Image (cartoon, rainbow, N blue to C red; front, side, top):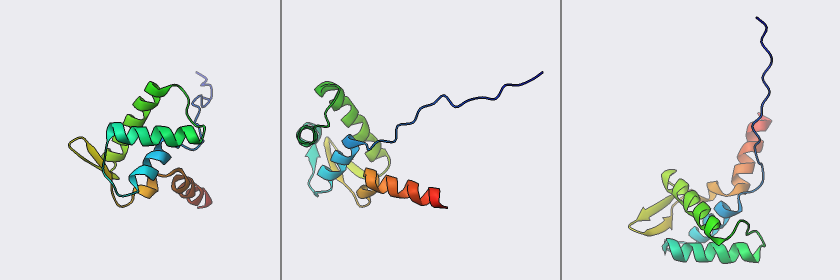
Length: 107
């Protein structure tokens, strides 16, 4: 029985994650925000950078998912309905992720 080689069919995007970057930028200021206020700041910053795509409601869902990911990774604290950035939050920024990937590739 001959086996055929498997091809990788999974596509991986390597573009910066603008939503996470803006969440990190806003939360790094040291203030606590409720989600609606936080999303308002993120949405306005993304509109200024012309990085809004998929509509406001879809962006709201993506932002909430990214924010919960930061909370589960221990980079952001959730107290009640408010969120606050913690130490090490900058490691979630796409430039830090790219630097870690480049360091791993250099090894």
